[in-house]
Image (cartoon, rainbow, N blue to C red; front, side, top):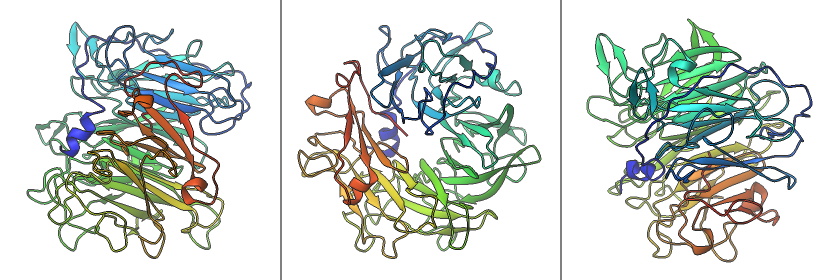
Length: 520
């Protein structure tokens, strides 16, 4: 199995028909939402949980996809799909609505709004069916909840930015990230890794771009823009992955060729939210370079550095705010010794000037790190980094990193998958790392390992909790998929609060699903 094959488990589809109507920006709702957490769609101050099932059957259409929002405080479950009233779309085979998701308060009314991508949506335009052109929706939260009754905006690529064109295989909305800048302006970043770019008179297929919206102003960014590192090349897939904080955002370019022949070696570009020459300011381009260049390791074909990225705030000693960021990068195709596809990851500190420091290059052969580098483990297929307390100077006590290893065998069970947790600011990387797999007792991941669970494919994190989805679980009780929400203090072993389990057929969640548990 290749790392591309693993990614394809969550994205194997050919979409059918799908014309969309672009709706106008709705006016801000009355200030009846109290505001609360960064995931609070009904504005009641309680955290709500977004769980996707992009392979779900909707109205008879296989892999049309849906998203469920579980409201905090036991206030029920909302199901959102292309069949939801006001969506101006229809569920179709292979759309994979919910493949990407982001949440932010787009209109400033105190209720979080949900952005959902369907990158495999076919778009009917001028009588032609544009296969896998992609589309996205912004579903606005209300005091009554989210979904039916919400104001909904729908966008194809040219509807979002008239200076671009909607085209087959662009996969508009393949990746999403949203948040608020340090100036309290909402922003949204949209990845379009299939975008063809004409550079120097030549068409570069799948070079990729991102759309950046701050407030109501939109910008389109690719590697041909002033100051953006790299060269537009075919199959770079700029925009394949996204991450960000209130001061920075990062774009993964896992198809980037490094040197003369290291195709798909990969890279990451870091921006800040200021504008230069009409585009966000690029601070630095990161890759493994050649031997002795760039970051640790050597850029090799099919490393796919940047396939997965995540970012969190970092407060340096002597500073009164989180001026810097920590960027986690996965390179699941990395060969470790003779173990092809064993995988690797790293954590990099980013400063406002663009200066960077690699803090924690990770692979299973590092001294004292648990586990053994094994072919096809794909360590780094997903990464999730968090600052558990951004109000204090960042240290090994506050920074946590979870790394997915979906190809790892567990006790002879093939491709059961695990996640590995690190304190990346520790002076010794392996001092406090731990491997977590499903187990009937003694694990924060309850259950039984089964073949091809691919645990570690679905990860995200907040300051309080780690979210681990197993959308391809084969265990009978969770065969439609499952999401585990684990307090970080339980992961550390300082508390035993208990893991919250979300699965179809329990807790008011409809008993239906094909890949329930997709997060991140």
